[in-house]
Length: 132
Image 1: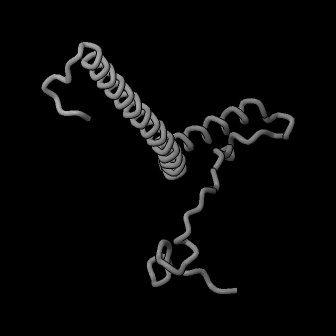
Image 2: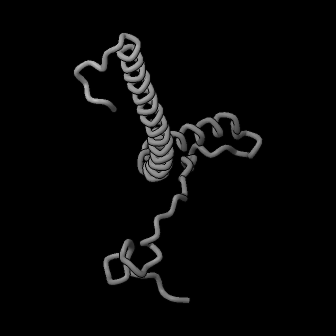
């Protein structure tokens, strides 16, 4: 087995090539311990409910302090994926809407022009406009 690396020396934590360069999402959480004079005489004297609440409170407090660091990358990745999907969907919807709007405008312009030409023909004059 290799001796532990000196954290201040080459290959220390956070340097490329060391295992410490890989971020870990696990941590040992220290639960508060009884001080020697406060130790119960027997296991039956331990208030397990109170100890459980205390440990839970301590873990939650530590988690809340570190939550930004723990969840930032995960949230960022998730948000990026959601935004990318939403942007792609919005782009498709906008393309469809613009395409439909263009068809509607062209159809209306053609109908108006045909109505104008028909009215000119019915009134017997070609008017000042050149034929289409």
